[in-house]
Amino acid sequence: MVTLLLKQYDLIRGSREVVLSFIENQVNEDLHTPVPAFDGKTIRYFLVHNADCYLHWLAYFALKQPEKEIYNEDFKTVDLIRGLYGKVDELITLFLETFESTLDVPVIGMHNRCGEVSVTPLQLFTHVTTHEFHHKGQMMTMCRLLGYTPPDTDVIRF
Image (cartoon, rainbow, N blue to C red; front, side, top):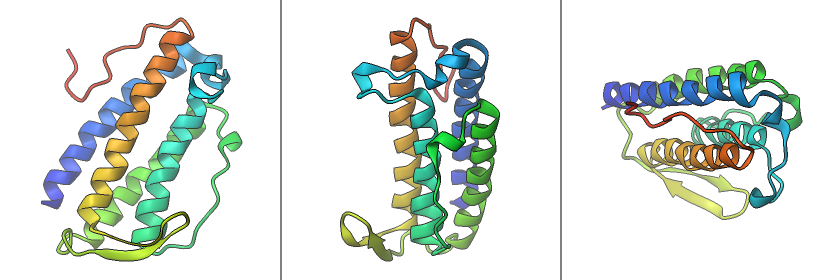
């Protein structure tokens, strides 16, 4: 199962790279432009937020690694954001290798808003990857609102 999930994650990485390349080459400085329809959030905000979600759920919650605060404003360029996702890529491998034989065994931990939570590693993997795609759609809408026509960012691209 882990081999399949790693292949699935490679598809997600490919889609993410399409997004990052488009933002880097077309959107550029509008990476930092607040979009009123999204509560004044920026594209950069959502890119960093997505990576932070992977870190919080997989590293801190499931793997019980010490928490390291991520400051959105520290990631001012696409290169810095790519570096952050490089850490996420390493984390995915560690996470899936660690839980390879226990993907359906609940992990219990504390969530800052919900208290004690019990979820399986497979649920966590599914949550963080679908969360990224949810916000990817929002970012592409933000690009349209800023006057850019986004590329096809789906896993299957034509």
